[in-house]
Image (cartoon, rainbow, N blue to C red; front, side, top):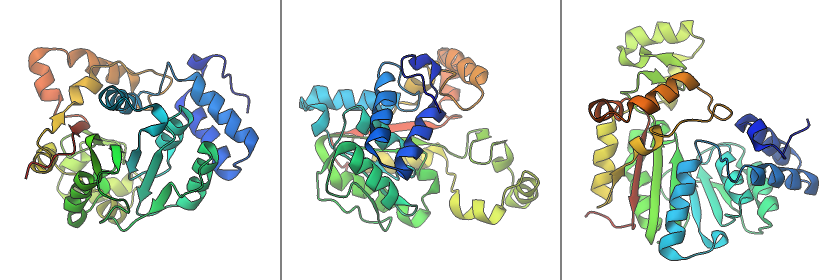
Length: 293
C-alpha cells in the first residue's frame, strides 16, 4: 500500500492503524521508519481522539518542564496499543501499557523496537494491582475502558491510579455510559435503555451475543463515575464540553460526522450544553495525584 505522507490531509486513522499492524507483524527497520514518517506527518493534524491526551501532555510539560522523552505515561487498558504507538512515534517514548488480556507480547515487542527500549513496556496484569511503584507516572489515561471493568475491580482501578500517579501528574479518562442514546459497541440507538428481556432479542437480531455483552459491557451512569473519581481525587473535573465543542475531522472520525459536528455547534448554547454533557461520552480528569481522603 502506498501512503501519501507528504499530504497529511489525505491520511486517515485507518491508515495509521494499518501501518501499526504491519509493524506488529514485522517489526523491521523499514516498517519502523514508515510508521514514524506517517505519525510525524500528522503531528500538526493529530487524530481527533488523541488531541485531548496531547493537551494533557503539554499541560504536564508546562508544569514540570520535563522534555517529551521524560514524561512517563501509562495507558490503563491499552488494548491494541494504537495510542501508545502513536505517542511513542511523536517522541513520547517513556510509555507503558497494561491490560487484562490480548496478544500483548507482540505489541510490546513492536513498541520496544519503535522506541529502542530493552525493558518490557506493555504487560498483562490482574486487573487489581498495577505492577508499578508509587508516584511513577506523569499521565495515566484510558479510552473507552471503564465500561468494560466489572464492579469488583472499579475501586482498585481508581485507587491504583491515585497510588501510582506522581505529585504533578494527571489522570484522564474517556468513558461511554448508560445515558448516551447511541451505544458505540453495539452500534445501536436506545436499545440499552430497555429492560434486558427486551434487549436480548434485539441484540440477537442485530447479530450480537447477549451473553457476551453481559460479560464485557458494564454501562453505568455518568453520576457513578463523577462520584467515584471525586471520592478518590480532590480536584476531579468534567471536561466533556471541551472535547465535544471541537469539530471532528472527517478523515479521522468513524461515526456520523454531520451529527458529530452538529452536536459541537449546539453544545455552545448555554442551556443545551448542560443537557448534552450528560448524553455523550464523558471526559473526566484530575491532577496532582492527591486523594480526597
